[in-house]
Image 1 (cartoon, rainbow, N blue to C red):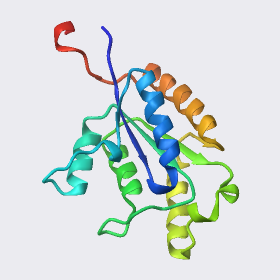
Image 2: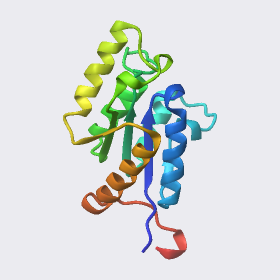
Image 3: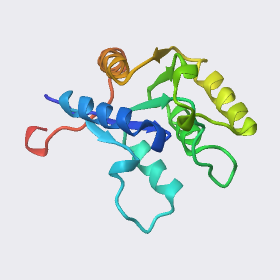
Amino acid sequence: MDKKYQVFVSSTYIDLQDERKAILRQLLELDCIPAGMELFPSTDDDQWTFIQQVIDESDYYIVIVGAKYGSLAEDGLSYTEKEFDYAVSKGIPVLGFVHGNPEVIPQGKCEIDSDRRQKLDAFISKIEKRLRKDWSSTEDLCSKVVTSLSKAMKTHPRPGYIRGDKA
């Protein structure tokens, strides 16, 4: 039976819009169901409750890190880090991609606040406790996401979704 897998894409948003669009396109080409903030509807749920529901429904979780920590939740963590922690706690396979040359990222896409930079460094260290890939361009990132996700689908099979008439 043909399964489609839902893949949650997590990252900061404004600085990685181009990368997110490219990854979403790649996921569609892999016959996956992409899930991410740009696809969220207007809802009566609070933001974190809705994010948790979408992650719970996802088969795989991708985190992409550039040089920004991201918008903070009430507890002081970025939503990206909270999403990562939540996916890990739920046992969802996590695929991490960290920019390998943050010094070449334009200044407008980098953390300038030292506290937020420290939080970003700590978050990257958390991601690095797992195997992860460095990336240097949108094309490089897409290639590594496709390769890593294809491998994860073989080594960590998930429930996925099957059309009702095919079940």
